[in-house]
Length: 288
Image (cartoon, rainbow, N blue to C red; front, side):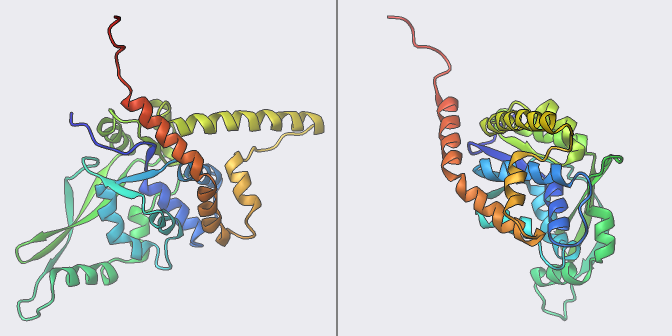
């Protein structure tokens, strides 16, 4: 297995998770009960990780379908892009696809390949149809059984649009396999929580910090509940900090970015410490 050269203190971030947040924070729908989990998962990674990765398949897919699914913009994807820390990883996903559309070039119409693709992206994809096929929103009661990705390939006299399918389990097992020799973390949707526990729980120093912070927070919350004689649903500490600074859902992207700026020094320290651990000699020098 080839070893990927991934940067320290980095995380893979699922495009499906980004889609969920964009759909709610972008104002396309109202949040459901899993939204706090999704938001917290993203905030932890966005604040504490220095570098973000998606798969090459997801990158190609989002460039094709984003405009149809999110016609009024993608605030969270734009937020990640703003950091200039987003890259793509190859070797993840299913490259076998089913042809769903064929576009032929007209020799009498001197449009370029890119112009034809752009026309397909803007006019050939229906919003309702794209959301039904490609948008996966986590819920408590339903498991996501299939992930679908659209890609476009060039052929001699035009182009073909292909859809590839994969189960979440297979997709993230491949992610684990590709990143096995690295310490890269994973930022996954709610429906992949079990996979995250099994394969990625022990990766990354940032997760350890968040775990300790959450334990302290929950201990304090338990004391408060005992004092007042009631219990309620705990809101994770970073989400608490964020929401206390927001007057409306429209404020969330800017406030998340500000939180990332506030934790810059901690993020640099995590990256430096992880590099020192990784590059330290694996064996002690012989005794003299």
